[in-house]
Amino acid sequence: MDVWAIIAISEGALAILMAGTWYWVSRQHTQYSGWRQRASLIALALPTLALVINLALATVAHLRPLRELDDASLRGGWYAFAGSVSLWSLLATGPLSLSGLILAIVGKGIPRVAAAIWSFLILVTFFVNLALAVNSFHGNAP
Image (cartoon, rainbow, N blue to C red):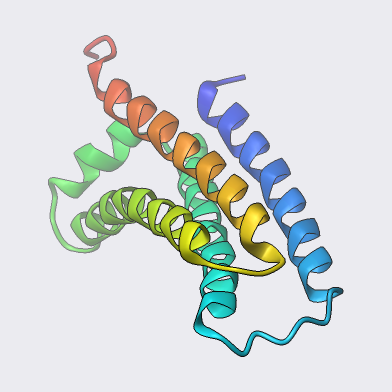
């Protein structure tokens, strides 16, 4: 089993746990009237979005190696567009999770602690995915 398959499976498991967190938050029946309460809710939404992007990118990297995607993007057209979207999506997950961590610090309410934990976990997975993506281009030349 390759590394990207392991990453995709682990991020799928994280997505299931994240769905459980959202279920728990929705069952609290809390009013988010102040800006700090809404900030803590948005702080949970940002790492959720980053996790969905990471899961999609890890699945694509497992199904089609990044070197192939990079070689295909040199032909231009849709391949170049797909390469740019995947690169910017990968780079966007870091600031999304970091922003979630900052909002969890200034937020108040029930999802605050869960948002901080999830933001930290997704930030770690961002750095792992980034290191693997950069390292995938330094393999043996064909």
